[in-house]
Image 1 (cartoon, helix red, strand yellow):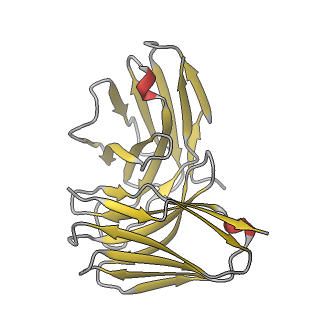
Image 2: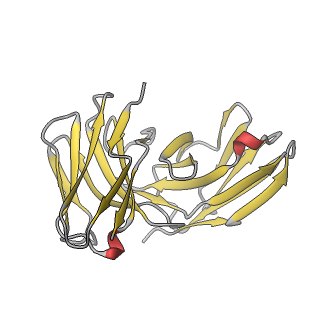
Length: 111
Length: 115
């Protein structure tokens, strides 16, 4: 069964810093990997989707990479802002039409 | 401009009292999902509908059922809620089934409390 791990569980950085969030998964037979943002007590907002054949995707200050063979993905956030404070979850989609989620990294950007 | 709408935002029910959570979508997507997310845990898939084709995850408790009367609406019924069912329930949609480029669109969730 697919298992998704995110490290660290929590991260605090001063405003303006660049940072990297990590995600690893155990089964490389995936359709895609997605990164989501979740604000406290809210639903999930899709940030980036990387197809299994792709290596990275970029949106604004966000860049996500995928190394399927090693079962790893990173989310790079450039020039962090207090508004980036949230929990970031990665999820891999398998052929069983299921998204397997990690437990997330809770990011705090300190003004 | 909300595309996936969940009601209510907060739901309080009593132990053993049936409760229904609702989800509607304006995206005309074929697939609708229900996820359960307990505090500090990963969301866990309970069911999904591809059009009217219902798919139940193997470890979803029998206490949970779902209905999809039309494309736009989907309901989650909890027949006899227990304390362990207190969680955030997330509804999501996607245009098609498994595909390399299919994004999921989530609602804001319903936070269920069981007293």
